Image (cartoon, rainbow, N blue to C red; front, top):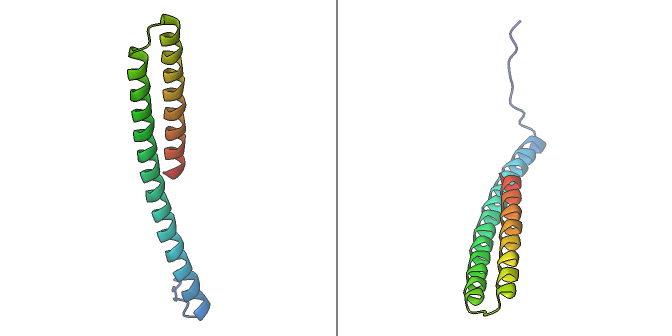
Length: 91
């Protein structure tokens, strides 16, 4: 038996359809904004760690250089983990 599909023309159906379209547009804009934020965050962290690396080069104490290197490593790993997790949620 063949079934025919009829389009619901009630005012509620049109409202729900508009709501769905608006929701999809909102989510797309939120994903785009989130990606832009993460790009800016990565760039800021990179610049901060670059500055910290320059500071490390000018420190005469070896123990302090190693401490700064360790801090840079932990900061980079934390930032990379944060960004990867946030990007996976956005996609």
